[in-house]
Length: 200
Ligand SMILES: NC(=O)c1ccc[n+]([C@@H]2O[C@H](COP(=O)([O-])OP(=O)(O)OC[C@H]3O[C@@H](n4cnc5c(N)ncnc54)[C@H](OP(=O)(O)O)[C@@H]3O)[C@@H](O)[C@H]2O)c1
Image (cartoon, rainbow, N blue to C red; front, side, top):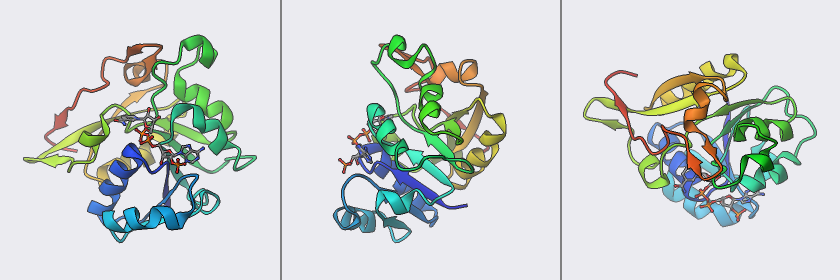
């Protein structure tokens, strides 16, 4: 498995820290050239490598950590995303449901990433919390995963575990996944809930 984070702001860097903590390689990219991102990537850890967006999207699993409206720009980088998993860490707050064709935001994102498997995850905590070690006093910080492609959840759950989190599978986007989606100006009930499990 190869991993990339697209968007190297607050959430992208928080997730890069999680990869660095476990010595797992990850590529990071934004619209800026890799040399602009490299000092911060190096400061986070040696397994975090800045690349161009074009090169970063060679990864099998790509975490989207850009402002919600920018996902369409990222999606233009490839005509077809078959074989790739997109982890949507974005929140669409406060975009009204009408602007998302009435879909859960991750289902709306999936429309742009033709052929990809889209899993919502790592979106429910503020970046400062996500950046801290998810293993505290023997407990593991919970991350919620949901997807309309339920086969896609298991490998993302494995990644979450490798990073030290305790994945909790919520099922489909408009079922359990609704608990971690914003709907207009209303946050899903599990957003901002910083929960821990005794075991992963
Ligand atoms: N901040 C939080 O606490 C938090 C919590 C949960 C979820 N989220 C979600 O996470 C996402 C990112 O939030 P953030 O707070 O990390 O934002 P941020 O600090 O503003 O970072 C956004 C990043 O995206 C990059 N970017 C913007 N447009 C791009 C494009 N078209 N292609 C590639 N890279 C692009 C920016 O870099 P360049 O300008 O160099 O391209 C920047 O690195 C948002 O969807 C937000 O809803 C945020």
